Image (tube, rainbow, N blue to C red):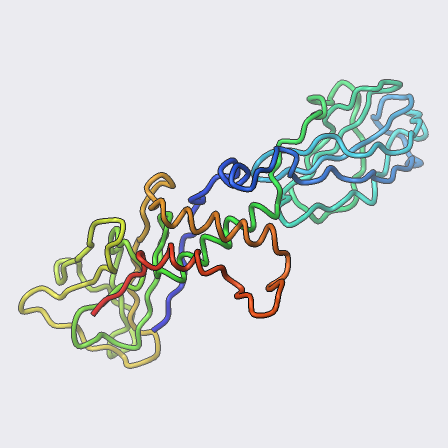
Length: 309
């Protein structure tokens, strides 16, 4: 049996605000603003308005954008001979950074306006050939990103809770792969079950097939502490013969509580305790004999462990 995630959750059970409140943190825990880029004139005619210009960079994450980063040295452009600027050593952000924004002053100005958005976290060079009139919005003065470490802890705490309880907290799609049909019901190892999308298999000729939904019923239990759901062949219906190869049967199903508000409070409390433990103890253990995961976390999660007969 193998279980693989098809569609990951798009939100987490806990918000950053909830975690910050639990940890007694203020809003300053965020992605740090970037360092300065390097700039140099290009010996070629161009469109950068003649005059002195400076540049700066910001980082963009899923949560927001950092405040303006460190300012570059000044370069003075001359349209006919030095009308372009080579920007290099553009800083690369942390794992949560998805884009960088490059800002520039107008000729002789002091306000930084949007020059371009680098839609990645890898490129380190850019050639500026843009006139002042095409510059965009002003660079932000406040940091609206989230602490990437907190974001990582929330996701990791959810995954720990899901693994311990055999549950999906926020709605997810999974593939259960079997080496053949069982002799009885097919138990789906993630609760609570929402629906079964399909049951597919490889027939004896090696061709892919879909087992019609009219051949089976779905037992999706209801409740915050419910066990796993199952696929039950209808009365008088038998499983089809398969090719007999590994993973020749696939059951695609959807599991989860839905929105974050529907996740049981006990699981959320366990996640908060675990995140607090990681925030306080930056190593696996701090003293001899201390367990890696606080006992209170598992005690809170235990009532939600999903079992089946």
